[in-house]
Image (cartoon, rainbow over all chains, first blue to last red; front, side, top):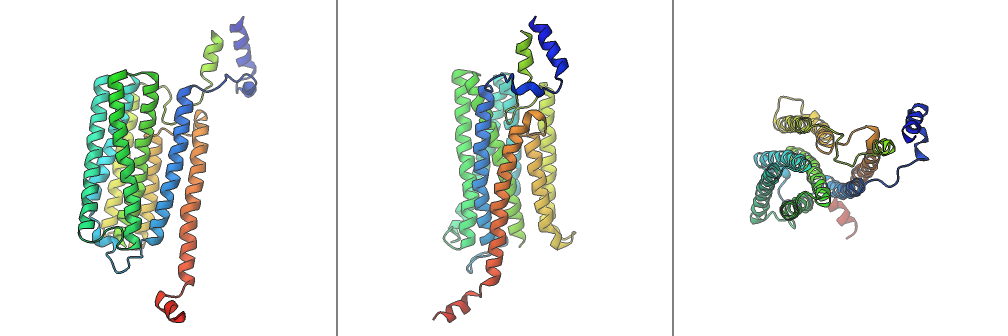
Length: 213
Length: 129
């Protein structure tokens, strides 16, 4: 009876125009959670756009201090970029492994992601410490204030991401691939990939555009 | 029973979620994304450091390459597509992009005009002292 009713309905309404009337109810929790996190990520990107705007306005205000081309080291930036790109890839591998519930590949993917993230943070910290040591700290000029706040804000996000990554590994270790753990893993993957998108903006606008000028 | 299956296919996709693919296809997607991203990154770094291209075109080229790479990341890593099951995700992204362009574009536009209309700082100080 139901079978024939559904089939007849599908024939009469191939494009599901009458879909609103027989809406299947609230979306599954997995979709609601990930969508909410997606909206948070977009607002995070809007926040970063303010830092980008400040940098674009202030990049020429060096107050007699160093210009971008004098302090940026393209080789370091290239290494950082490759680290983040590869970590995005291994994070994707870890989320595929989580979906098929393969512990070995999940731990391996997450561990490699963590190491690459830590290499990125170490290089960035060394660059910051080097600049401050030469007297080019964030208080030297408006340009350096904008530089340190934009790149430092991204670095803080990566640090938080590494902590979250370790938490996810611990949760899978303690609780296994439960539905709630998989939802958190999905949000973490979104977060990590979004950080990579922001880094694309950072290295293009700050290091390549600012370094050439 | 058949009602259940009928309802199941109606749902949207969560952001970051792919349509049903095998593991091999999903890994291939990430590999393609990584390859494209590395290619675009290498092009950006090459163009920024070379004098083989017309110099005034470099900033435009860098921005175009950056936007292209962000698109590659969105499609291959975040799995944002134009499919009908992705409408909500794309609409949220579009609104986010609108705000980003208003903030960055508006700031750069207004501040450039302010700079043009302001006298240099030393004249300004002389006028008021």
